[in-house]
Length: 296
Image 1: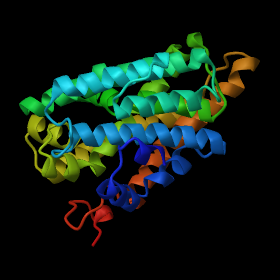
Image 2 (image 1 turned 180 degrees about the vertical axis):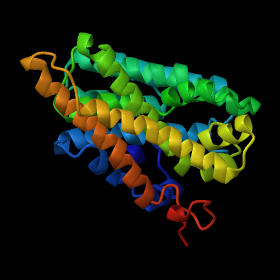
Image 3 (image 1 turned 90 degrees about the vertical axis):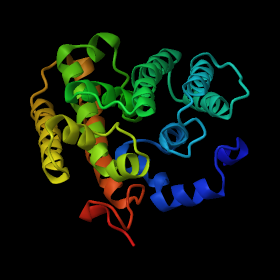
């Protein structure tokens, strides 16, 4: 396994990831992908999981070390975007992912994907890390905007585009209708994840970057009321996404088929990731505040 060879996985990590059944995530969220596409998507998910656990976990290698975190992120981005070899294991893994992707996509697509990774790191992860370091609880709108970036959804939506065989041109990617659908997918999925990760992030790691916690602090409500408010926020976004998916305007015969496949890919991510988070075990524990996640 590449991760073992790079020293990114040790016995403890293997037990944790095996218990979480992380290898099954891509099958849930990319049902139309080929085996080669699934492998590339899985490698990127593993890069995200490794980086996240090193940064957000209270025992993570880079927890609270913003300068080191930025160094690793910049090295990884350079390797991914330009193919530069680095000593940092995560950067070497990013280079491996780049080479795998170039067997499946164009250089132009890879540059767009790299832009999404840069947005995730610099407009999401680093801001979230500062909140965590200084125990800052942002307002709800500010948090939602940051959480979308920090979740990495912008990168996995690009993967969904690739896995559906639907390379979307820039003019259509940024069309207001498509832009709104992408935003709804990213918000619904990232905020939904905050329900599942509440115990891990807030109760175990004392991380303020969680929608439930942010709502509790800003709205001055208890846990149960905050969860209900969060579910309302998520359902509102999911419902709007489905309404828009049912009435997509035509962008021309050549583009309509590709766009429909891409929308199907986003739908699969929203629904498949929710299913996976319930059954996988990544967020399950004997002390979870959610009945669906209680495990002995």
